[in-house]
Length: 124
Ligand SMILES: [Cu+2]
Image (tube, rainbow, N blue to C red; front, side, top):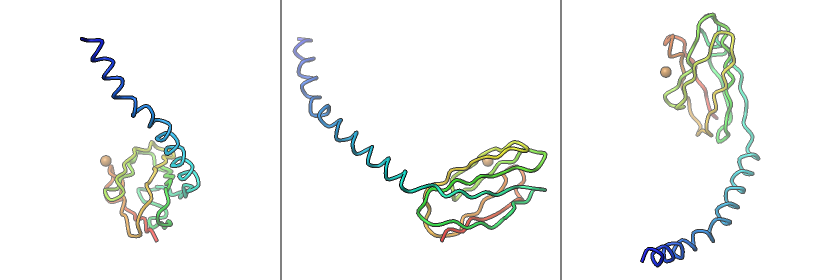
């Protein structure tokens, strides 16, 4: 009985296996799409617990890489609720915060360890 059920089970999976090449090529197409849509890099710094610059701009609908250099002697945590990111950056280090493609708007960010350290990203 076990053998019979096993045979039936694998026979029922056959359509799934036939779908694998289709799914694979779909993934490859998505991959080349993303590569064509290059990440825009924006560099900012934190010094004396202030973002420099505190107001930044970036294009809409493109993945972004925000390179945050911490020039202070204490760790900071780059955080944004609307961007859904947070990253701890050690003193003297550069943290890269990857941001999904965004719709136009204003997205505020702050240092979660020093909540008065604030800035905003304007997407246009
Ligand atoms: Cu946090």
